[in-house]
Each structure stands twice: as C-alpha cells, then as structure tokens.
Image 1: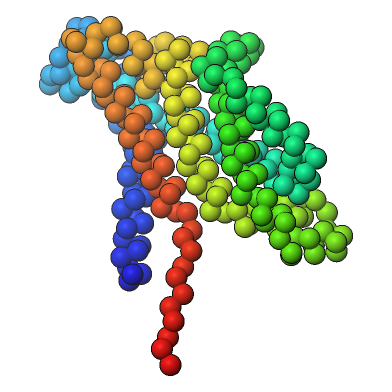
Image 2: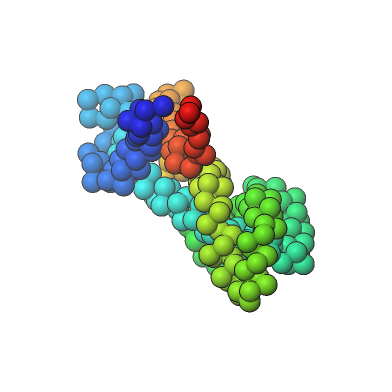
Length: 273
C-alpha cells in the first residue's frame, strides 16, 4: 500500500479524536452564556437564544455542553495514564518474577469480582471530601486488575526469551530488565491498552457523575447533565441526548485513534531474482 495512503488513513482516524478533545478544551471560552445563568424557561425547546434549548433550570444546554467536557476528558486521560503505567510495571515485574506475578494475579482476581458500581460507591463515599480525586482513585482501582492481566499475558513470552535471560545472567537489575528490555517490546500492547482504558475511564467517570459521587451541581459535567435532565427528556430531549452523544463520540473517537496508532507489523517483500 502506498505510504501516502497509509498516512491519510491514519490522519482520518486520529483527527476526530483530536478535534473533539480540542473542542472540549476550548469549549468554556466558546460558551455563549454563563453556565449557571438561566436564559430560557425550564426545558424550553431549541430557539434563537438557545440552539439546544434549556435544562431543568432554564440554563443554556449548549453552554453547559461546551463547558462540561474538559474535566471529563482530563480526568479520563489521567486515569488511563495511571492505569496503563501501573499495569505495565506490575505486569512486567510479575512476568520476570513469577512469585510476585502470582500474588499480583490473585489480587487482581479478587478485585475483578467487585462490581464496578459498588466499587465506585465504596471508594468515592469513603474518600475524605469525595469529589473528583475520589472518582480518579476509584477508576484506577477498578481498572488496574483487568489491565494487569492483559500486560502479564503479553509480557510472559518476552520475559522468557533468550536475550532477557542473558541480560539477567549478566547481572542486570530488575528495573533495567523492566524498563529497558521488557516494556519497549510491549509498545503496541500498551498503546492499545491505553485506548481501552481511556474508554473504560470515560464510562466510569460518567457513571460516577450520574451517581453524583463526582462533580456536584451546579458544575457543568456531561454525566451530571444526563442525570439532572432525565426527568424532562420528553420536553427537551437535547438536554439529555447532547451530552450522551458527546460521551459516546469521545469514547469511540479516542479508541479509534489509539488503535490507528498501534504499530502494525510490516510485510516483507520478496524480490524475484
């Protein structure tokens, strides 16, 4: 396949995520109204002053939609980075040290038995002050067990390879084997894992917002918008549909971008003699 076609396809798959993330980042400055100022009647239909209508308090849905994505994306990105980094280290160490790996896998199995919603509630409600840090902690705790199992499976054949054994016999320390030998060979796995964990983080953070254990009113948050306006979905569906569509597009576009950036094994061409 020509290289320019490959690059064009890569750009087309990455561009939606970049545009959506950029729009969410600058959204608060593009908002036409203050996020907590009523501009219409409650659940007003779309009109000239409010293209997406009003919410349960008459606030502009478009304004709150533009202002409500930045914190969700920043939180989900942080969760995905923390989960991927923790899983990479634990999975690589577990593959190199089987005794440690068995302990990590048993702990992961126990945590995987905990339902996601129950885990969010237990951690967020017991966290001093609650709020966004509690949601981040809950998302990391719920995400690491699944990620560790994936990384451990990918790291096992790498750890058993000859050059890893040679480096270990040569006296290289554990941190060197993890950082310099194992993890560089898991780039594709870790990048794919990052995309999956970002999508999972979006849903966990959104679930926490819907359960009101994260951002609290009158904050502008996509998940909180869904919960607040669910009672008036018949009067103004956009108050619920707009943030729901935004969350779905964010998850799909970032996952698509991550899968597009995963290194693909090249094909060797055989030249006829």
